[in-house]
Structures are given as C-alpha cells and as structure tokens.
Image (cartoon, rainbow, N blue to C red; front, side, top):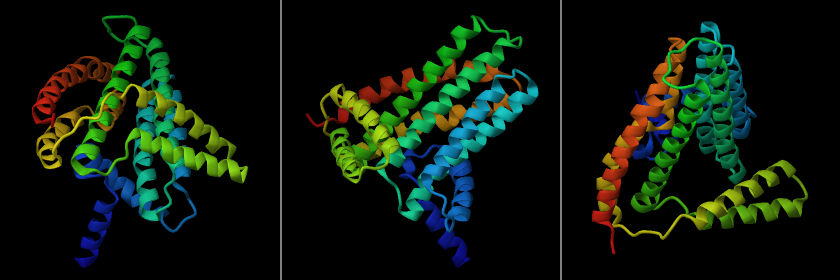
Length: 290
C-alpha cells in the first residue's frame, strides 16, 4: 500500500496545478502518460525527443485523415490519440528528470501548431473525397472549425495563465519570459552552437514581443479571492480545453462521423466560450482591486 501511495504522490507532483488540469487530462491522458514516463525515466530519451515523436504521430494522423476512408479515419484517430499522450508525457518527463529547458517549452508549443495544421489540412482533403451532409462548402467549414479551435485553445490557455499569475503567483510575466529567453539566446551564441534552438528562440521572442505589446495593463486581484472564484470558472473553461476537442475528434474519427466534431467545434464550443467569456468579465470586474 505504501508503494501505491508513493506512486500516487509522484504522479501528483508531475501534474500542473489541479484547477487548470482538464478532466480528460487528469483521469485519462496523464495516467497513461505517467506510465510511459516511468518506463522512459532511466532511458536516454529526452523530453524534446518525446515532443518530436508527438509531432510525427500528429502528421501521420493528418495523412491518414486525407485518405477519406473509414480505415484511414480510424488510424488517424489512433495516431492522434498517441500524439496527445506523448504531448502530455514530454512535460512530465522534463519535470521528473529535472531537465526542462526554455527551448523545450517552445518545441512543445510548436508541436501543437504543426499537428493542428496537419490534422485540419488532412481532414479537409479527406472530407473532399467523401460525402458529408454539411450546410456549407467543405473548405469553408473545415477552416472555420480550425479557427474556432485555435480561439478556444488561446482563451483556455490565457485564463489558465491568469489563474497561475493572480491566484498561485507561480507564472512569470511575458516580459520576464522575454528576459529569460534573451539570456538563453546569448548563452547559445557565445557557445557558437545549437543553431536550430537559437532560431526557435528568435521566433518565439518575436511572438512574445507582439503578445507583450498588446497584452494591456496588468490588473490586480486579491489572490485568495481570485482563487476561490476562478477555480470554478476554470472548470467551465475546461469544457473547451484542447484535450476535450481532440478527444471528440478522435471519437468522431472512429465512428467515421466527422460532422460530430465539426458541429461541436463550430456551434457548441463557440457558444460555450461566448457564455463563459461574459461571466468571466463580470466576475473579474467585481473582484478587481482598483
């Protein structure tokens, strides 16, 4: 029993703060990823290699979607599921091995973007080869679903980040991240190595500078009050967490019913974020320290 308790404590230590973990991550994806991480712990495999593996499976999923067949969609769903587990595992492996790097965080984010492009491109090609009863042309519906998913992911990430800053105080500001990445870039320049890592950091610094410019003023809240109110709102935001979107896409792929995912992404999830955004603004305005 003590071994089980020790294992459970170790698992909890590798999670993000519980209020920002989605239900699918917490009870399905993270436990599977934890088993993989334990198997990889004594191996030379790095978190970046796990991220690249997730990218390979994500691109493979997109290629399978492009076939437009039941077998292709089933394979696509399976590959995307593996990519999702690997995406959970890379950060957990970095935490358990204590070898996370600023570049690793960038690679992790880049993997998500590349996988998203591959998935929606493959999905569009696949749908164009099959009959699906949609109210608009495929190459309007699929990009609309893609843009909707990106907006949903950005909003969930933003409010999760705000919770870390205002409730837990354990996330750096954008300007602090820029300073850290600039120092890392200078260190790599002095060593005259890691050209690809330097290129990634330069790209991310440009992206962060744009974020910093348009982030607006930093609002102030009482940490305890912010925590008590927003931990419930985060649960509502988690209904459109990336893991939820992907699981619905995987299920609809196995059923060979892509319209299920498209209806969810365009209508249900977008309607949900409009509702929660209104509630979030009202609540935060009430508890803001002026």
